[in-house]
Length: 202
Image (cartoon, rainbow, N blue to C red):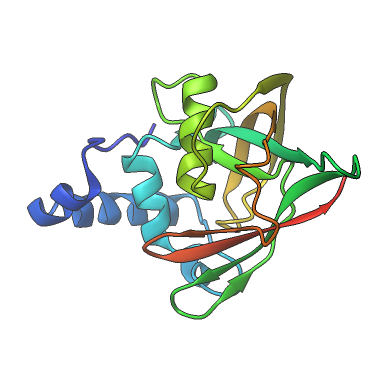
């Protein structure tokens, strides 16, 4: 199992830990013939993204008995809804696109309105959902939440082509009130990309 020290990414960069973890990961990927050379092109994320993901506890790289290297993640999917009190029309929030700082544009179809990786030691609960919605949509306040069960999938990683992903999904649904609703949608700005959300008819 590939498990580097899970410290703050910025501090480990300063100590050289990030580069050491990156070199270790490169060796592992080469040993398993993972075609990482095209990562960072098209809609794929970069090698640095994977290093940060593992160091941050958002993913585990594990070698199965068959010898295959897989990326294990746990993801909370949150469907976000709003019902117009005047018309009764129900709207669902969807991710429209992601634009990386290098100009690349990525479009993907999620199981929910938004997705949040679960870090090691975390459990998908109301506190986590509130934090995710605040970080991604800038929404605060009471947010009624309903659990919709769990699921999972095993497939080639969309973010890291050539590396098999095994994902456990936790599904939730939330309903926004009028003060939390923005008819123009929402934008989440991060250091490496901006994510755009829009409303569609539910």
